[in-house]
Length: 182
Image 1 (cartoon, rainbow, N blue to C red):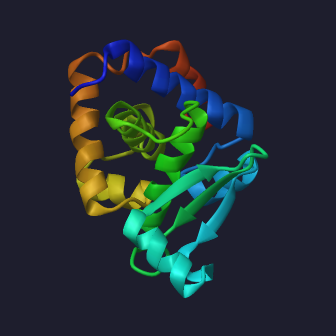
Image 2: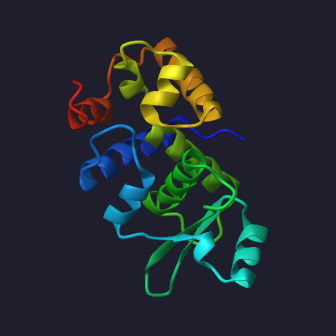
């Protein structure tokens, strides 16, 4: 399954709008900080009871989010078995569900959308393009993402360039202005 071009564009616009609304303007991008600004409660697995932790890990080894009846969003994340980069990506994925208006149990399409949201949000190609030297290593170090994520970001950046990415769209110009690299 692949998302439609319009869905990708909508997600990229949503990332930019989210950053504008919550004043995210420096790299590396912290999903922890963004969640707090958005009023989303973060709940590490280590703070759960043994029974709750086992249930959480059985549901997801990385993390998940729930919306309470009151409308409060909570992101549960595994802080015991994962490093910072993985936790940050997991939280950004869950923020993607929130920002994209996903409610209830996420299906395959919603998971793909949240995955793309996290990938784009943590290393947007227009910001990658402004690095002095663009390599997998420079992306990893600048954006504080894993080697695997940096590889995906590099591939996406190259694809972005191939399709004329440096001919910035409106949301990309806003993103560059926000991060003061326009």
